[in-house]
Image (cartoon, rainbow over all chains, first blue to last red):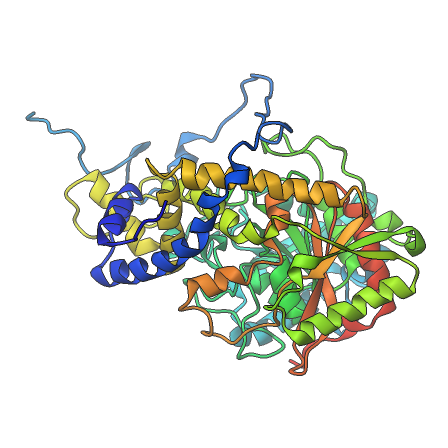
Length: 100
Length: 488
């Protein structure tokens, strides 16, 4: 696989990442990420890794605990750092069209 | 009192015996902070009244509880990605400016229980992403050995604080070398513990499978005292290991160097290694050999892929971990009018994150995206496994591995900031230990012709901190490097 980092890629990835880039940032990132990918792309060509079993030694096994209820953060504390709030709710721009 | 004489070990025993009070110790170091912070830009949060409350509380505990206060009165600066209840925790980012967590990290609670004084929150590369402490929203930190140079990163201010005598100890975090590399650049001791040995509860996540908290100190004994206070299972951290934490400080001198086998990592002695760094490492190897240790070359054949592997896995995890910073629950929210919730997220994040953080989020998002996940992230996971196996194979032949912590000494401010790839490539000495989840320590082994410190790294198998610290302590005791301090 070999691909080029261009403004289409930058725009697509920025949208996925919920970032709004200025044109200067997008231009800079095209060059920087292009050089970075030219380096890290090497691993896509390593066939010896293809059949490596990453689950064989239990490193990625899930850790479990007893399902015991315990106190959680009080609502007034959880909301205390919110940029905008109404009562114990986080206030955000409207997401539902009431006339829809 | 000379702050460099007040090591963790000296302070703790002196406070418990009554030789000095918590207040006297705090005052000595506080004067140093107030004198040197304007020069070094170490501290993001500093409050004398908060420290006075702590010294009073700890002093009152000593009569009844000194036996459970191994760090009585010891000032410890805390990297600003470690939560401290009610005190600002910004990760050196605009997106968390003013944020005060409602809880403290487990490591902070354990330090306080052990008698330590939380001595301010210190600067870092934003969200622990960087190797120079130039990526902070609150300005770069300077290296105490040469104010024109970087202290390393991302725990740059943690290392600079200890090197400059602002505190005898600091907590840093290490995801790809962020404790060890600044320790190397600042001439102090930095330990990255085994993954899972020290709780990550309350550490703001960068890459959850790689992050570890560890101590930065002036001596190996101090490092072992901090490690002993921090390590151990924490039910609040789902990745915390239940492997019993072997205490290290009470057996630091119990090493027979003639029975030790050391492997020198062949791949880290390549063209990019500064000749003066190589020379000092060669001298360190001779010191072990002359004392009777068995020393041999060890090859880690997949080490050459560690930078690529790391910058795929770490940025992928970071893109997920940093998705929570969207201006809703905490942190910065844009004041611009936005037409939708999504637009609010994008604007808030774009205003709040710095360039390096955005770059890594973009990289991580890409390698997880449809059509590229298997080729990049899937392959990197497998390579990580192979790199880990290289270490396991090595540890069947040797007790620990020896290498330079970094290929160079501290570089100049602004030298690499415009070339992210060059910055990433300088992490070659440290990254693999994070990928394998194994412990590694950097300690001073000399200076270059510019009087800049050089770091020696010892790396061991999982949960071998006791042996690693014994080896490091042995080397430290053969030299005077830990007694040299910058002339500030």
